[in-house]
Image (cartoon, rainbow, N blue to C red; front, side):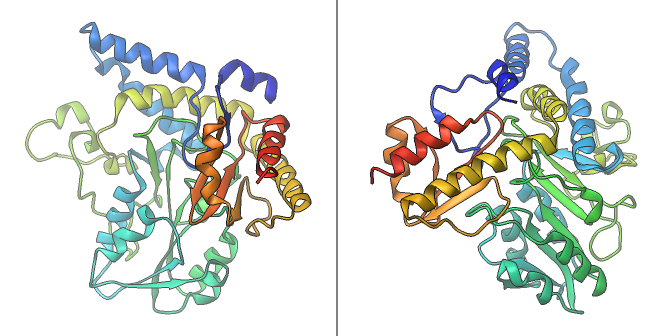
Length: 353
């Protein structure tokens, strides 16, 4: 893992901030640079549209769903808004306390919905017959806690609710099957090592919304047509028969890079990456205990958050150690390009406080 990572990444800092943004592998940087140079030279950028399909297929394989159920876009918030708008007035949406705004805020923007907030650990027990949708992140951004998704899905099924899972902080290191949930969405600029401007939505095979009626692609443009190049003018005559009807017009430069980033994650394997990441996170937890610090309980997570130390993030950055200050916590996130030496350097620096 470390030998391959060394050939693809060249950080000039001790980079432990993948929960904010992942590093780009060298092949992705080269491909994106080449596409930009094509544009600067007046060569057609349209030749790069096939990169979107390659990235879509790669993501589908990583999360275990057919490519026909994967939509390509740019943000989770857009897809949360799409699902929020599909709910009938009066519907109840159950969310986790302190979850990421891009997931939950679109539901709050509809005053005719009831958004009920519950502690993450109590979410499965909070599903009730009147719940239409449970929307939760697989891994919490602020502190790395992992949701009990199996229990959430079982409770939702028992009460006739749909599930919408944000896998932005999970896809790439935490094995998951998108088919276990009704909808999943992810931005790919974190653990999947893509540039900003890349995101995916997975849908049910029948493309229905939480109410059981067809999910309306409110922002559908020409790329959402069954034949995109024949759908550039006027109303789109025929929407794509797949989840591609929910595509946003793609940020092509980002997708040109994304196909290489996702291919690397596929090559290494999510199981192997996850084992590597968790081992480093556990090493950090052990070292913290020796220093008298107690992180937020998040067993098995690649993200470690330490209460009360968030304000040290700026000082650490000055010393070339990149972490985050999130909700007052010092948040460190360990990924495939990190080593035990990175963990030890962070512990040594934290220990000097």
